[in-house]
Image 1 (cartoon, rainbow, N blue to C red):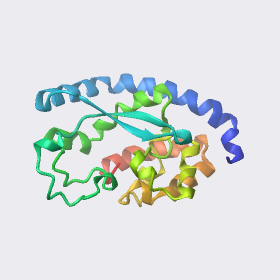
Image 2 (cartoon, rainbow, N blue to C red):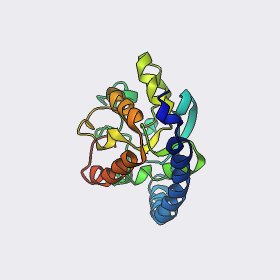
Image 3 (tube, helix red, strand yellow):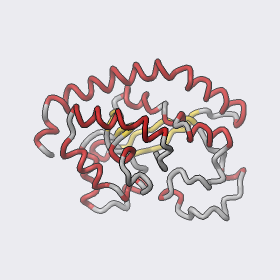
Image 4 (cartoon, rainbow, N blue to C red):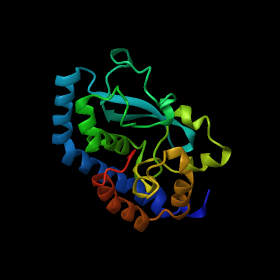
Length: 205
C-alpha cells in the first residue's frame, strides 16, 4: 500500500468529509429522489429501488443502491439486443429493458443519487474508483485488483476523463493513477469536474 494511503487525509479526513457531505447531499436531493421514486412507482410499480452486489475496498462485496430504471427481462424481447454479454456493456442506450422514465432518470443521473446512502453507510466514498460487479472483477488481471485498496466512489477519474467512452474495466490505469496521488485537492478537482461531465452526457457515467 502506498505510504500516503496511511496518512491523515485518507484515514481520517476523507471518511469524515464523506459522512458529512453524504448526509448533506441526501437531504438536498431528497425531494428529487422522492419525486423520481413516485414516477417509477406509477409507471413501473414496485420495487422503486434497485440493489446490486459490487466489489469494494479489499475486494469485499457490498450492496449498491440506485433508483430502478429497468423493467424485467421477461417483459421485453432481449434476443436481438446486440450486447450479448450485458455485464460488459454498462448502460447501453439500446438496452430494451430501460423504461421511458428510466431513460430520463439516467440522462439526468438521478438514478445514481441513492448512492449517497452508500457513502453515509461507509461502503463508498464520494470520490474513488467506480465499483464493479463481481462478474467483471472475476475476469481481472492481477494488477487490476490494485483499484480495491481504497473505497469505491460515487464519482472518480473515469467520470471526468476524456476516455469516458470506454468501460470501467478498460480504464483501470486511471484508477491506479488516482490511488497513487489521492489528496484533498485532487478529490476537490474531481468533484468540481463531475457536474460538467454529467451535463455533457458522458457515456456510462
